[in-house]
Image (cartoon, rainbow, N blue to C red; front, side, top):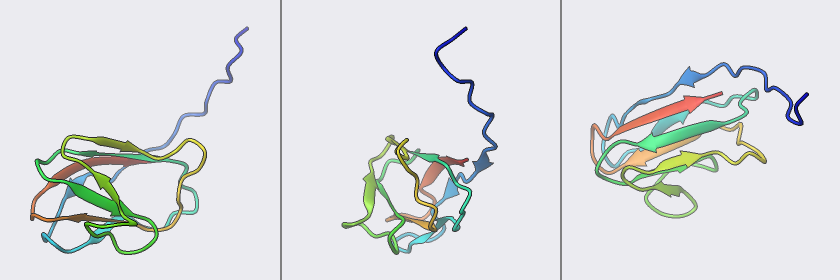
Length: 99
């Protein structure tokens, strides 16, 4: 017997993409009351910014995801609100999974 509970398999949704228009925020994930977590990897050479408290921008309170960096939602809680993403350049790529 193990001391760890076996986690139920998570159904993931691929939210990967690119910035469709540089200097303009876009929706990364819509509101999802069933969301329990997500991760985002910046696969571009420029910084990306994400926000669940309003429209993402290259300033606070948005969270900066530096080029090549990975952001993982906290295990203690994940926002269920819509999450937006901002990048300065059209076609900046990112990989993203929501569960």
